[in-house]
Image 1 (cartoon, helix red, strand yellow):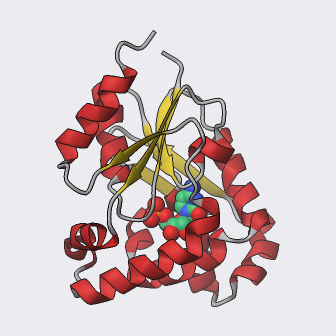
Image 2 (cartoon, rainbow, N blue to C red):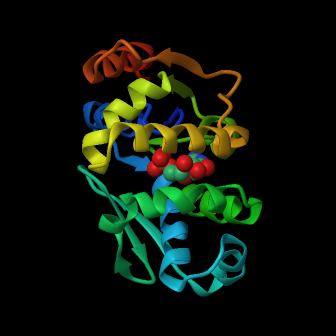
Image 3 (tube, helix red, strand yellow):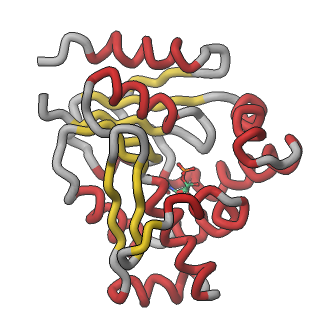
Length: 207
Ligand code: C5P
């Protein structure tokens, strides 16, 4: 099996959890592309500069993503920064980073260097980064369901998380359209196992 399987969707649609489990069931690595945008957002915070300025500084930095069976490790200039990528501060900066075409191209190059097979989650993996992928999925769920899922992870109030999700949906909408050949799964009323099951039904048997 030498496939790329893409799982796209809006923030907190469950794509990372689904991608991890699908990859585990198939015995291949999973990649979370959002971590690379988060790492660039972290660079802005660390250097206290705008997305526009960090774009100019990218050639000075080295960004790597290393998949392990349980998580993705992200290295910025040789330092592991994975733990720092899921704060509300990073959430607030990341969309400004992700709208910049040169930053998107930089992230896409990091992704395309990773040898298949893998399951990758993101916004535009099926439409732009891996258009040749054999299996493409797009997960959706209502903003309220997504906020509810993210509250424990963020340790913030439901309303704060919901407004952040709505703001990010709006900011991300241009890079978030499903690929024309993606299978769309509404996960609002499915639990994690249910979604994983649906995805695997489409993939099996892999040739
Ligand atoms: O998936 P995650 O929520 O970690 O992604 C963080 C942010 O990175 C998204 O809100 C979006 O702005 C950006 N992103 C993107 N394209 C991707 C993955 C993430 O624009 N493929």
